[in-house]
Image 1: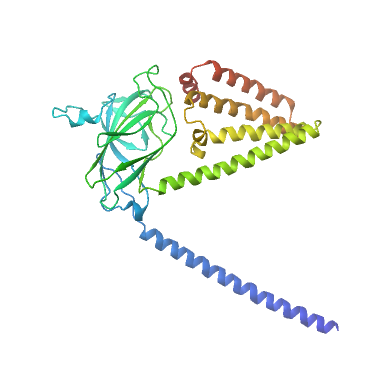
Image 2: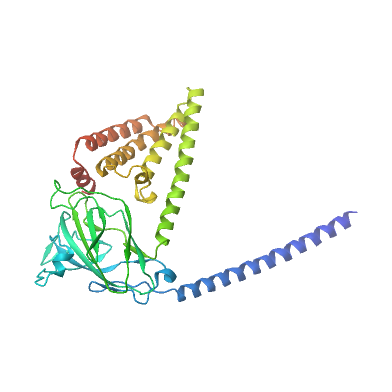
Length: 351
């Protein structure tokens, strides 16, 4: 009987060893095939064009087949000038170009005639696109440009964000997502973009401006907002659940702190770039300065809330003075946010 059991165990061991050995081989072969396939895909993928000397050649780039393209590269740069398409179309056009600025990029620190440009100021940028004739309609996307701007395509104003100005009194800053459509008749597309910055610590464009066939950028934006709404729903559900627990068991303060942290995290998420500014779908006319102050207040208070949550669970491990330190720091920060102008706040944060 023992011999039969021993033989059975040996047989099972041999079969298991054989199976594991072959599974290892199958796994290695699968990985090798995946690597080769991925390598082949990378080789076949087109290299995205880059603008050179203010011209972006997209004649061989089909946005429907090749996907969205970033308007990266050298844009014509006109420092301290707010020019319009009419200025470039005038017969006696004598606009002096300051040089070329790579997008995405900032003009702070740009060397102009031996001098380094400051963060505050205004400028005009120009790009000439040679489009592919296949796409008659195109979509432009501008995401969270930290400035006020307006842009024309072939003389038509197609997108604005905030109000461009020459000082902090005349400028209205903004950061948002803008999707706009332009018509392509096969002729060159002339983009003229005014940007002013008297608020943020850098002036220019921090994320690529995207160009695509209609549908792809809109779908990506819709998916971002869909996942964002799912995240918001989960966070608010957890917050409500823990608030109910606190009401039913008011001696357990940790549930209150965790619920508050969920609410603060949700507010932060819907008002930043990662959610494609989800809050703007419900508050399209909300003042950007107000939104910025809400975000900063939530950020400042989140540390105190989470440390109090830890303290309620681990009384001995989390010292009380650390909570008081976070509270003092948070109160000072909130006081600054509430009573100082936004321009000074961002200067201090960047400083």
